[in-house]
Image (cartoon, rainbow, N blue to C red):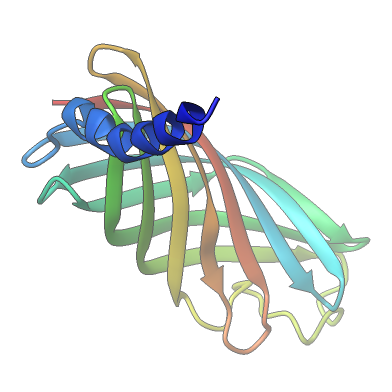
Length: 189
C-alpha cells in the first residue's frame, strides 16, 4: 500500500516524456482550410446583437514546431436584424495571425493566435434617418486587433477538423464587437 504513492509519482514524472515522444513535427508544414463561421456582433446599440453566417478560407504555415502564421479571407453569407428597421451584414474580411501552437499527441493540436483584421460591412435602414449612431458602412473603423483560441483533431492522414473561438473586430467608436465561432477542415501538406 505504501508503494502506491511512489508509483503515482513515477507515473506523473514519466507521462510528459511519453507524450513528448508522440508529438508532431510541424516545422515547414503548410495548410489550407475552409471554415463555417458563426459571427456574433455584440453591443449594437447597447445590449442588442446580431448573428451572421460566414465562410473563411485559411492559408498558413508552421514556421517552427511551436509557431504558426496564417492569412484568412472571409465573406458573409447572411444578414441579420438586431432591431426592427435595421439590417447588418459583413461583406468581406481579411485577417493575419501569428501565435503559438502545441501538439501534445500525433492526432491533436491546440493553438492561440493574435493578429489584425480588416472588415467591411454595411447596414440597411427602412428609414434613412433612423439609427444615427450606427454608421452606414457598419463600422467606423475597418482595422482591428483580433485573436483566436483553437484546436485541431486529425480526421484522416493530412485532413484535420478544427474548432475555434475568438474576436475578429472591435470598432473603436461604436464599440461593436465581432466575435467568431468556427468549425472547419484543414488539409496539411
